[in-house]
Image (cartoon, rainbow, N blue to C red; front, side):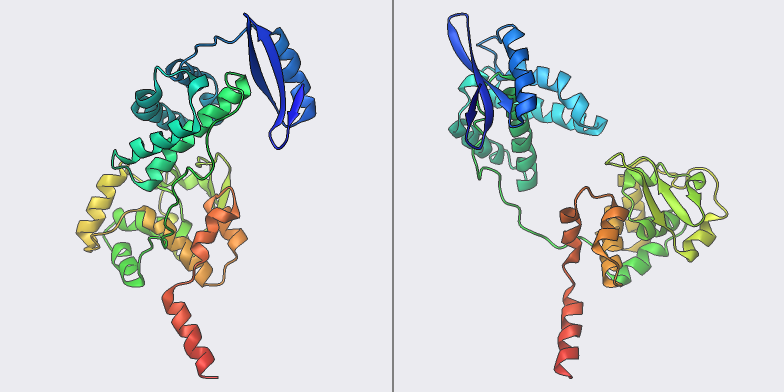
Length: 310
């Protein structure tokens, strides 16, 4: 076993007249276990291509690491990008420059910077898996390859727009009011039922992170919910719902996820804590929630006027 500075433990195995380096990880105990497994394991085919290993990655790693939706996304990105660009290339021959050219190729497809990050992120994850399994000695993914995303303010609704979309006829208006009061994602909205409400608190079971969330409901919404039984949202398609609300309200830029952004911004503007908001939204880290902590221009102007008047 050998230790490379900043990279963890490795071992070199000689088989079939060739040497190969196998990554064992940074933890010494786990590295010892992998070392004995690598010694006992058969020689990995030296000519494994990206296409061959990407299928194995989708079959073994992805189902254990991602949700059903994430598995579908990974399979789509592999089919549309990774296999198309790298398919027959030996995974051991993929270099940092190949990955830089891969980014330029992805950008030539007129993808948004966020989509390019998804494409490159899956390539990095795939190569990390190849390193962990010993198919390559080191992940060639270079630093500073990911495109930087321009920070944008949350796409929230104004107070006037909130009044307009909240007052459309039911059941559309009710769904909007429910989304504005809870900050739920569309998938979560379509799954909640009246039985999920107890003592004025809505328990959200089916979440993106698979973690249970509890959201206290305002009194005015509770009074509406007392007359409802079963599923609270009678819609499946967010696209059709958005279109109908736009027509009824005249807010042509509306989409239902804006209700989540509006809920978060209003929570902080009323003095709510960032940590509590993180839990209500179901974010894995507070860094994801901090984007809502950028106070609005109106609040900055009001604060400046208050200070100038002292």
